[in-house]
Length: 466
Picture: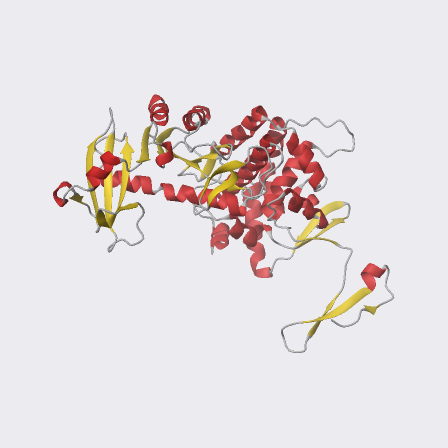
C-alpha cells in the first residue's frame, strides 16, 4: 500500500486517498471516502413495500409487549422490524444486527427510525414471556393463513425436534442433552411445518434435556386447533420420537391421519428376519414391504431396501440380516393407500427437515441465544417470522419454486443504493444495470398492486429464478 496522498478538499476523512494493489499485474486502485448516504441493502426497499402492502407493521405492533416510557426510546415496532431486517441482511446475533447501524441509509430503507443497538435489542427481548410468545406464534399462523384451502385432503403437518448447541451453556434452558455430536449443552425446540406451504406454523423452545416427545401431543393439538379454519390438517408426519400413544390420540381426536416412524423393537425385528416369501416386491427396484395389523385402526408397514441396489437408502442395518436397511412406519391411513404409497408420502418429510437446517444456518436460529429463556424463544420466533414472510413474498411475486434466503439475498436484497432527499422527497437510487431495470420495475409494480397474487410465473420473477 502506498503512502496516503492528501488533497485540499473539505474534511480530512474525505481528503485522504490511498492506492492499493490488485491481482491484475501492477495496476492499482485509488481508494477514498465519501459522505454520501450509501447502503449495501437498497433492495430491502422491496421488502419494506411488501410489509406495507400486508399491513405487517400494525400486526406486529399489536402483539409486542413493550411499553416504553422515555420519549427518546425507539418505538418497539421499529426495533422488531430492525431485528427482522437485520436477519435478512445476514445477521445471526444481536451484536451483528446492531452492526448494521454502520450502513448510513439502511434504517431509512427499512422504514424505521434507526437500527437498534445490542443493548436496545437485549432490553427489547427481555420483556417477552410465554403469553406474548404465543402471540408471535399466532402471527406466524397468520402468515400461513395467506394461502388458500387445500381441499378435501387437507395439508400435511410435519413435526420435528432439533438440538441447538450452546457450548458456553450458561443461558436459561441450556442443559446437557443428546445431539449429533454426543451429550452437549443445548436447547431442544419443537417445530411444526406445513409441508405443502413450506411455512412454520408453530415453534416451541424447550430445555436441552427434554425428550423428543415431551409436550409433543400438546404442541400438535394446539397447532391444529389454532390454525386458520380453512387450513385443515389431514396428515401428521413425525419420526420415532413422536410415535407415542399420546401423539396418535391427539391426531385422531382432530380427525387427521398420521404416519410415524416406529422404533425397531424386538417384535418388528422379528418381522425383519422373515423369509423372502413374507416380503412383497414393489415398483421400486430394491424396495420390498410387508404389512401387519397394528393397534385399533392402525397399520404397521415394514420396509427393507437392498443396500447394493440403493446404497443411499435410509433406515437401520441389522447384523443378523446383512445386505438390507430396515424402516417401520405406523399409520392410520386407510387400506386404499398402498404400503408403498405410505412410504412415499412419509419420505416427503425430508424436505421439511431442510427447513430446520435453513432456519439454523440462514435465519440465525442456531446462533441466537439470550440470557433469558423466553427472550431466546422470542428471538427465534421473529427470525422464523422473517422466514415465513420471505416465503409469502415469493408467492406474492408469483413464484412457485421457493428460493432459500441466500439466493433471495444475492438477487434482490443486496443491491447498492444512494439515499438522498431530492426536492424534499426521500429518494433511493439503486445501482441496477440498464438491462435489469425493467425487471426491477415489474417487481415493484407487482408489490404495489392491490390485486392478490396469481399462482403462476410472471416474467419478471422468472428472471429472479434464472
